[in-house]
Image (cartoon, rainbow, N blue to C red; front, side, top):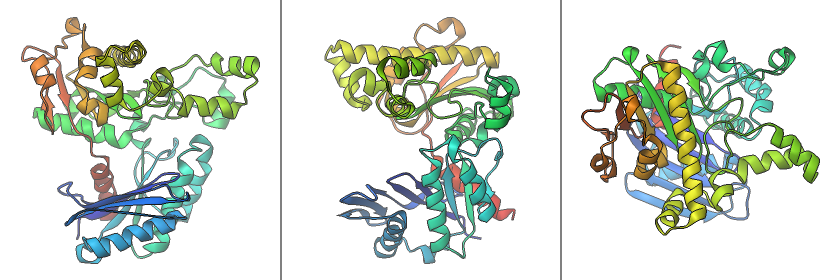
Length: 398
């Protein structure tokens, strides 16, 4: 049986795809279609012969996926030649119903549709990707892999909000958590890197990209995580506020006359680093910090302070910690963030080696000191590989 899985991540105006060998994790081909439905779209494809880019109007997600198929045929690799075993779809919100990847059928589509109120910014696009792929690949098994699934192991004390019972029972208001495929992949890779059995390892994973989340993982099982009912809660992010006094919503409605939709948009798209410093590109922020910009410095300090708070909280939740793992764009490349976020925690057994931390390197690596009881690691995430592996496991067991 072929181990190649076509992984699709459909956004509201974009479609990202990768052809992954689930055994090795190697991407035989990948691409990104952007600005779907806008005046001019852009399609970037990476194949055996390198990278190609085309511009032109792309009206729908179906047009985007057809463009991807044409690129595979023209620039390689041929999907027919590799015998794709399945199509794996990233789905942001699975609610409390889905703790595992699931074969996509009409019932699954209806179930994910019913969850749209919990993820109105994400699930509709994920659904469109599934519908389009089912039309274009009617003969291939298709699998939904949920961002929330990994965190379905949280105990009630960790996922329950202190709100009225009717809110919880009738409206599914609870913590779900996100970035599950990343946290699952990185926690397993950290055990492999350390030569440890995942079942005996306690890890704090810090996924720091444009979206940011922390997770406390005991024995390979998620026991707490920073994102909540939506991806807005938790750490400071590129354009999301993270943790916030909920009374601020009502204050803005009362005092400024804002609508609920305006407040929601501002907290998701105009806050975080963008709200603090005017931009969410961390490389630009670091340059401004080095130049002595006090606005950028405050944004950096707020960002790292929030990370440190969660590290301390999850240390308490786990009781003992074997490793703290940084991943995603900022986590993997931000030596300054790693140093600032963990500085002063030496009494907890967390000691970074400055030379290791500052060294430019790719791949998994140790950045803690030799005498640090808690290992500090940088592990590149690979959500596409995790989705491919989970999709193939479903197909193989079907």
